[in-house]
Length: 182
Image (cartoon, rainbow, N blue to C red; front, side, top):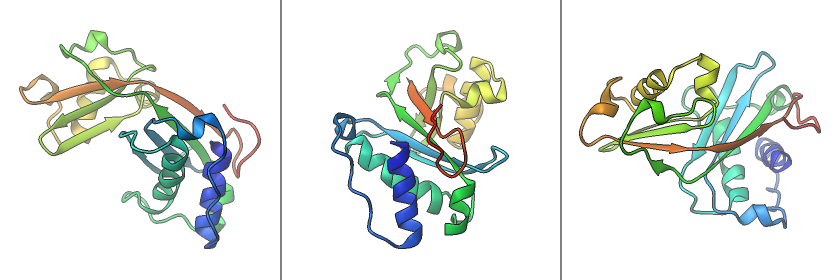
């Protein structure tokens, strides 16, 4: 998956043909996925994903790699000369399941990711975010609500849905696509 994501980014940034999805069993798994790009200092450079497993994961990873590089509204688009300075991380998601009743004690930091939905608002934070910021489960819930554009305590309000998911997370250990994955 990492090789596919990097080859897709290289093709996109060079204006070349896109690589074909590999002929591997995992390529057609119906799973959501996020692609994260980081620079030498580990600073986020782009992160976009899709929760809905409406295509094979290989297609989703390729599309999300391009989106992370070109469409994350928090950052300018990645340029071709930057790619060698970026590391790729992929999070392949399990199907989100309702957390009902919503109780912070049921959230396992480092294992669970969260989705908060109310009306047209939605926020998602990957499982690796809470340990990075040293959040408690209640702080993780509050941050996910804020990401959705809601108040920090919105998870307690009627009409708000909280879902949990897990992710298989792996990434390049060297910039520019080193052969090792973590």
